[in-house]
Image 1 (cartoon, rainbow, N blue to C red):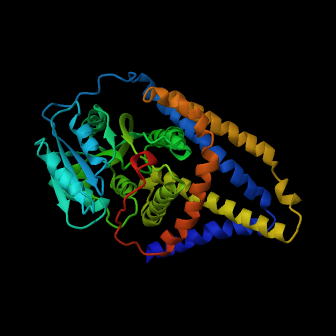
Image 2: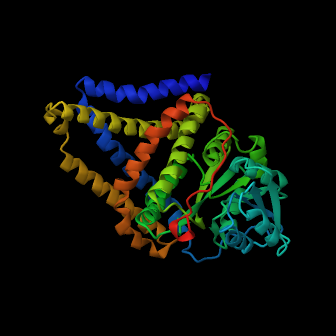
Image 3: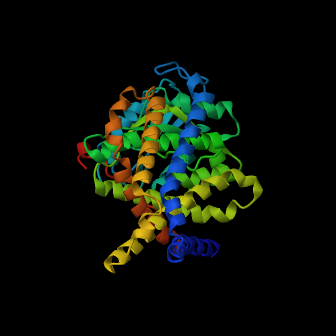
Length: 440
């Protein structure tokens, strides 16, 4: 009931605030918010990432380098939930078993796949005794698959990757070392890199994961809290997971939820950009829409679930994360409401002079373009040590505002009302778009 009340108030506010400002003659302030919120956040991300760079990252050796050493007798469990991953799981498991730290066990969880994933996993387990297979009779969702794997694991440290992720050979060292060195840290998120680049959608994501996601993760690490670990590559302390009752089964994005559960219990989460894995991402607009819709729903569910729980002052470091999320939703609805009123006025042949000249579009557009370019250049300079050819993505990444801002705005408009007003059910996954080159 409390979540439903919070959701109703949040949904009403993001619709009524921009509508009130527009209809009350305060279009100037509404336009200020629409144009300068992304500019302000871009400046925050750049500043935070540069601080992270100068404080820590610039002192790290350039790759390839010797990764941090973890004790040889330290067993590490790699969990790989698989659902219809027949085309990718063999390569993924091979990369997981090829880690520099050899004292590992790999647990692949077949979550009721409808293809031949189960049979292939059984065959692979005959080749290496370090590989164990768990079969679930029906599709229970990624959260359940991870929980089953964690319960079966023999190690206190769990590395979790997707069924299409290719770990770099030193990834386990970079992910587990902070857990050993910092007892208060419960989660480490790595640095996913895109390997599907045959379309514009795929190529833009190469730059997005560096210039947007990478900078945000660095900035949040500076402020001491992460909004989410990357579910495709992350590591956990198993006793911390047990303390929060593992992953929630009714959340659209289990990675966002587990991050908040851990941090609310006083645990910390780190970002480790040197822990690399190579992943497949959607290369069609349809596949991208489905993915971003799930991400948007997961963010909205996290907002409504944890907003009532972070009011205590001891959780003050989480206030900024929820505040930023709320402002991003308010920005999407402000843009939509303003566009709707413009269309209504245009259809009624009413003058738009007062609203369109409040802030000259040429000025704001040029300013936003400059900040975006600076953001892209900052990320490329920082990330080139992890992917030397990342500079080739600069041409494609300039299209990011046109493609991804629009999709992210529309998915927010689509999912936020649903998440605020409807009850959550069991989250189960479907086969995602793995890229055109992989037959999807």
